[in-house]
Length: 595
Image 1 (tube, rainbow, N blue to C red):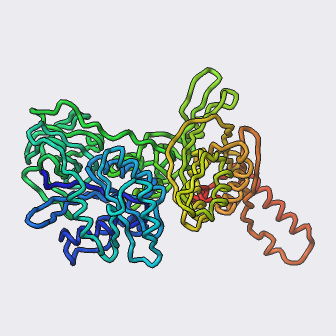
Image 2 (image 1 turned 90 degrees about the vertical axis):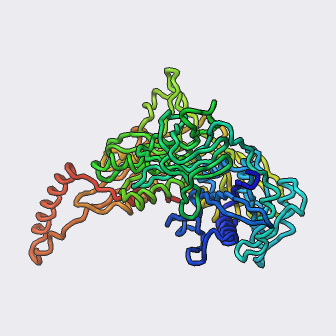
Image 3 (image 1 turned 45 degrees about the vertical axis):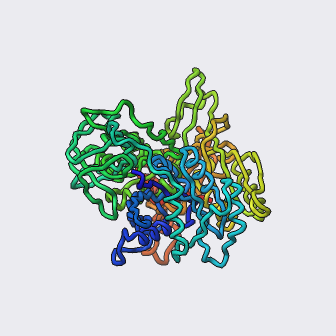
């Protein structure tokens, strides 16, 4: 066990985690030249297309130093703030972490939040300065930032280039000398923590675990503590590029177990595996429950696909534990699910994965956050969906969630960023200069204001330099209104939103204008209205498609033409009373991109 090292790589988005993982795998010979491709651990098409890591990936490497043989278990983690739950799970299964910082950009917001997470879990931190081969690298400045942040001596910081492979050998020396081996006892009862799982249509659910105490053999009868279910370990093994079966795994090892589980609910991340006959006294303190930030309804386009959508979401939840969902119904869209996401990127990724991996065609409603509604009867309701709002005369007041946001930026962009945050009803808490040209701004912002397009606007007003990290802070009283969109007088559930009263008028007007562009013209006029309660605040009309009935009437008296037009008008009037409006899927999504 003294020769095992478990570590993860944490960093801000795009600082070179996946590239460093590629070099480590090549250096240890864990992947041969024929199989190698860039971002080798990112095995999802989506990850390759977008150039981001979405899932944590565990892999085992063998490393020889002198006459000693070491087993290194590496977990590569995502860098985007929407996937921070993946990072927390990886950290729980490790003893050490490589903190990668880009030498051209310096310390960013996500670097800091991931570092704090690692320190809370008492991990050994190895600071790594990456991209030293770039002409724009500023090693001295960035080293100072790292020393200020961690308080380590300068010689502890490794300067490398993951792209060229320069300095990778120092990383291995640091992993072996600075990360402690697992403190575990092989003779104790089995105690293993599940940190991830995937669904395989042939073999059932494959659970990935880290053994803290004891050992497990193929064929052992094991139980999952939280569900109490018992299974035979049909196959256990270690995670290489392809899973490698083993007869036995011991304390300190990271591996997988296949036991023919078919029901997704029977495996939950953070659960403990132990033996049935010699079970451990208590379960490992699992992960904290995930807090969804953004909620949206997902409905099947065809109502018959409801059960299929449920099983697709369950299989997806196995692989992405931060997705939460519960059934709900809507007048306009029928039966579907209310899903909780960690952010807008997370929501977009889930929608893409449903389409690609499960071939599910879905409608997504406008994303919103959860509010506390205090009624005149003294009740407190948790409202995720505008349709769940009680009538206006029953509401005492509404509280909305506020976040504590940290923004790190170059000092030249402070003005634009402050204006953006103040426009979003933000409250400036502090402004600290980390170096002469880098500042950290701390704001309290309403979560409802940042779920739409805040991140994109922040990137564009800072030319891509500002980085952003946040966590839920508290609930505060706000003046909110429910904004309904009516098509020919009928409210459209999927387009209703809860919005601050000061922004309702302009948002309603922009929604009507946007929908006018997107809803195709029909045989009758379509009235698009935005309303708060019974008060209409904006209106647009999609004009009817008209056939030129006077085309065959050439020459002659004007009354002949008028007679034909009047006849057409009567037909149109009758049509409007029974017409149904078709709303394309693009209209539901366009609401997210309203500027």
